[in-house]
Image (spheres, rainbow over the protein chains, first blue to last red):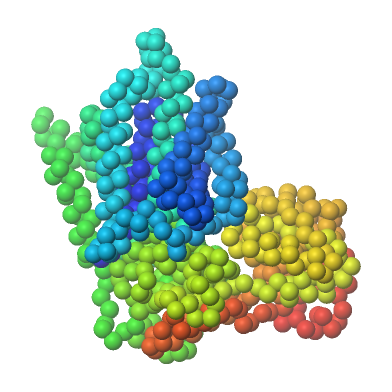
Amino acid sequence: MSLFSSLGALELGFIYSLVALGVFISFRVLRFPDLTVDGTFATGGAVAALLISGGHDPFVSSLAAMLACGLAGMITGWLNVKLGIMDLLASILMMTALYSINLRIMDGPNIPLITSDTVFTLTQPGSIDDFVWRPALLCVIVIVVKILVDAYFSTRSGLAMRATGSNLRMARAQGVGTGRMVLIGMALSNALVGLGGALFAQSQGGADISMGIGTIVIGLAAVIVGESILPARRFLLITLAVIIGAILYRFFIALALNSDFIGLKAQDLNLITALLVAIALILPKLRRKRRNRGGA
Amino acid sequence: MVKAKLTTVLSAALLSTALSTGTAFAADKFVAVTAIVEHPALDAVRDGVKEALAKEGFEEGKNLKWRYQSAQGNTGTAAQIARQFIGEKPDAIVAIGTPSAQALVAATKTIPIVYSAVTDPIAAQLVKSLDGSGSNVTGSSDALELEKQVDLIKQVVPQAKRVGIVYNPGEANSSVVVKQLKELLPKSGMTLVEASAPRSVDVGSAARSLVGKVDVIYTNTDNNVVSAYEALVKVGNESRIPLIAADTDSVKRGAIAALGVSYKGLGEQAGVIVARILKGEKPGDIPSETAKVLELFVNSAAAQKQGVKLSDEFIKSAKVVVK
């Protein structure tokens, strides 16, 4: 694997870390199976691309993208909490609606950003190449986001949200407004995914309506890979594991892209990726089993 | 412990990729090709590139290293393939489809990129102008001259006033066609009636919604429509609405006529451009091309079913007649 493709995998890994953190909050913390992210990843890209191509500041545009996606996530939560629509279905409805909304936002399926200034080009020091700068800046962004997320989940509100997910009745009995916690959590989760989408559009030359497809699968895979490779109980370590999982997942794809030497072809890519993820999930378990047997 | 485990996994991953990167002979030219998705038309482009390169004296296994990757419909993967290819430093990269081309153009300003099967390369910001971009990008676009398409509609259904179109609003190429048709049709005294099919299963119901509202249904090379063309044919035959396509394969499946780009030919054009680059020309000096080869396909049986009488002269002008 060349330096370039490793840095490319790292760059996408950091972007999808934000998605993975978002998915972690909905699926793991709130236990809310949320498919909205397939829509909000593209919404984040769409809003950012629209504003940036309209001459607005890329940083403000990215924040606006986060807000829009947070709102979308909140609506999913609202459909569930206030209108009593089953969680999975509520998120599917929102995801479906967002497809049309995204087309409206972009007034078409694609907004290119190839010639526009982005958060990457504006901050890039002249002495550093863009393919090095992009992952570097993303690394900083992901670390800041991780610290903020960790900090939030140690506040009263954050602990109440964790309680809502792990035992709804108990949380309610303790006086937690669980409905409100779900709304906030879903907003937070989708805002992070939207930030991922906004940064993806800026690093990949534009937003496209198809960019959200499969986001939930990548996010979930990242969460699970991270958890199995770095099993941890402390919140700080769990979020770190999720980020590592997202990066590893991209390296698996890079690996699969390099697998033609054993007679595999382009169309086998998704299969190889799935196999690599499966191996990553099984290996730690096998090792634990062996260790347990040795101990006995 | 945890750390050790992590490093073993990572190092295993890195080691096996290190082993896997192939080596090319120094004298060989190296062309890397990527497509956003597998699809008969896009695959034909790829094959066209390869054949044209062979004709120009660059043959795989002899003096050409050829590499192909499909993103399997995922833009994230497309971005990663772009990075991967750039890292391998090929002599030229062929990008088939808009998202693949954008990911590459955003990632390199130096390695020559030849796009193909992109309908509007300027709107996609791949090139600044069609005659010599001055950058590292050139290619062959599948934009159809819509005037010729409108002429075809008039030839097949001279009395048509309302033209229906079924398309996926999520496809960049289709929305370009719809926008242009809206401006173009009124000049010939016709209007456009849209029906959207965001998924291929929606094609049938979208077509049905046009019954009674249109005199003819025209479709572009929209991926959803092309993959579910039979659903459109069913509606056309039942309601006697003439169908005109832009994808020549659709004629075999039940459209009356199509004046379409030969995607193989489009790929060959891209292949010739690649060969020019391999021989030392600068991509920025090579103008972007549109399809040179247009082929008229006619289906006389479908015409009968959909209530249209075709003139012998028209049938004679077709390259292929399906009966």
